[in-house]
Length: 372
Ligand code: IPM
Ligand code: MN
Image (tube, rainbow, N blue to C red):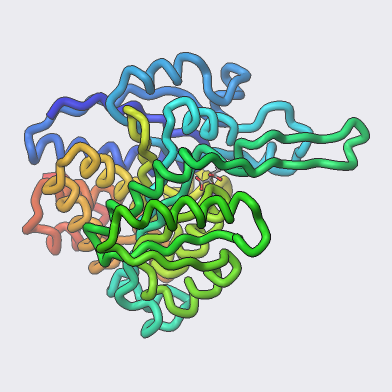
């Protein structure tokens, strides 16, 4: 298959983790005889520095003329502590999601057996967890009208949803549940919010089209607790934009590191694939950022194009890296030797030589190249 993949490395650790995902995709292209190209463009704080705009027109044009987008991370501390900044890096990502119509953000959460001991949660609670979060991505409080009065003493963000916006992501969530454990949990705050009551009404009605899927409901405060108490009760979680943002960071604790959580944003013609973690500015350039979330996002990109065997090779390579502790310090605190790019080298090598990884593991410890 021939694919043009626009690469938007963004800020902080974005470029370093994205580099490793490209490495994995290039190895897949060699192993499975595909042709992938990787034109890149600026986004976020890096783009503001260069052009004054977090999503320059050139970047948007590149995205629109590509088959998919591989996104790194966005954000810079100089904006976080300046509430008066006229432009913010995050606006680049939000505008991109909106422009491309990426209304569904899919975030898989899995407890890997070999990492159970890394989670601060009790092993028997999390073992076997396999959740797919369907987060609405282009509506709600993120995109509603924002206001600040002239005195700067009163502010508001409007949370708006339409029936259509709810239906289109709900269909995707139910369809996904059909291929899984056939359960959808709608997370909302219907005891307080009008917009949540609309979600309940619309999703309850739509569920009649999927009689083989069980639908249940949780208020978001309870859902936050249940995710930690008993995550195995969940299959597909369907929720609005901000609840999904918060719950997916919380859910990453189950996997042992936020550095493992990948995501796919779909809905328009062009999908965007990105790790859920942020730009982790303190780690920039240190070689300690975990590239696995970015590499697994590349795997989701392959699945999106029906390249399941290729995606499975990436997933297998990641599992092997985790099994052999070829991991960055977030998952391997005692080890300071294995860097972001060494994890990427190992995964690249496994993709090219899936039966040879033990030898390469030793090479990594010797600091040698693993590329044969
Ligand atoms: C995410 C991020 C973004 C969001 C930020 C960077 C705007 O936290 O993708 O989860 O809130 O959606
Ligand atoms: Mn987030």
